[in-house]
Image (cartoon, rainbow, N blue to C red; front, top):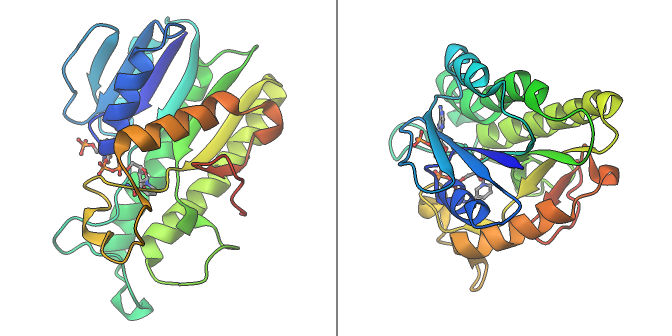
Length: 237
Ligand SMILES: NC(=O)c1ccc[n+]([C@@H]2O[C@H](COP(=O)([O-])OP(=O)(O)OC[C@H]3O[C@@H](n4cnc5c(N)ncnc54)[C@H](OP(=O)(O)O)[C@@H]3O)[C@@H](O)[C@H]2O)c1
């Protein structure tokens, strides 16, 4: 089968590409990022901005005759930029600019990926379309507040994933759409926010990807539309 990983230059995405390309059942990994990482062995890189519709349309046109694309993982995401974009502690810090930026990458980009790539996936047999979400996107689990744009963008992403699960189940009863929370992982995204973490709660990317692949390979059609953490435990909506 073939896999597509969006966010292939990221801490989690790069590790996902490397590990998937080692698996015998996977004959090709399409690695998507804005910079387009180097081609190696089974990895074919593509330079695409997931917030640019024409980029995604061009890529889906390139891949439309490929068969057996049974795994799509969206590992793109934004939380802060080390500059003006910072997770809000209060509603007083909200800005339209921050909302637009965060939602573009975390919600609208994955929605466009679904638009252009779900149609390329098989109509029969097991296939998985998944996006890295975050536990903070759970409304039921929210006890701390704050991080308004990021939380809301992931909650909206989870809603869209549920919608796609319902739509895909009508076409293929073995299709799985799921959101995944990787835990807190030592990447550029989490770096500024690792300070208060209790010992042992920060995963390395290799560790986190081992967890994520175990969850992904263990998903069944009964799991479609839901969100799971790194241990495979369902996260409430
Ligand atoms: N790390 C954690 O602790 C943690 C916890 C919970 C959830 N997550 C989620 O896991 C996912 C991956 O996070 P990470 O920690 O691996 O972050 P990361 O190292 O910062 O990687 C983020 C990736 O997103 C890509 N990206 C951003 N904007 C893009 C755009 N417009 N078009 C295409 N690619 C774009 C970046 O690629 P470019 O090279 O193109 O910039 C990069 O590959 C995110 O969805 C994040 O919310 C992470």
